[in-house]
Length: 216
Figure 1 (cartoon, rainbow, N blue to C red):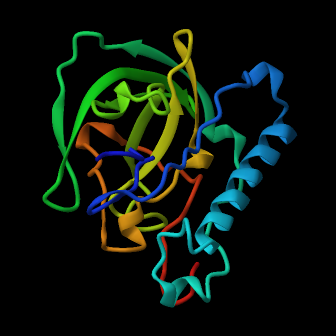
Figure 2 (cartoon, helix red, strand yellow):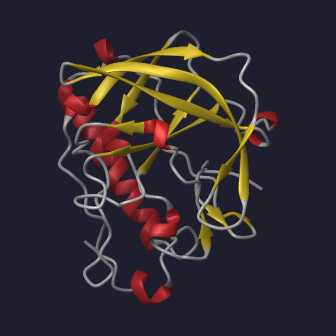
């Protein structure tokens, strides 16, 4: 079963059903300070879930001393409005993962946006199995690579969770970028970020790399 794509997969299936998306507020309706509060709220919620043995991907030996994930400081310049171009005729494909499992995905669309005065585009995916479920029918998966990988952030890239918007615009808040669960525990099977989704810039937002000896 595929899910966080929720997208953190256990070898036998989805570990949990968490989502980290919030596309209900427009940029015009949310002030900078309000956005920062939302980002901090996301960080606090993620830390709470990592502390909770029922939802944490951390092995017990790391979770018992867990103090919190290491985040970049909230930066509203990494929250952008993107144009979503749907790809209605896209065919499903098998996305490789960190194990032998393959995840059946379809390119739902292309998001195009301006970040720090430069234009970028990324593919967003919809899991074939999940799109037929009531709970996840609006779920979109956005994995990406950038120039922080292997330095400030995990070498394999990070993920964003999104919801299908009603129109053709969608908010991308890279402050909500998180690591695949296989970063924390090798029992998880996580989708490998397609090379197509490389951003030739530094996304200094979201979760940083995880160091087991310090939890930071």
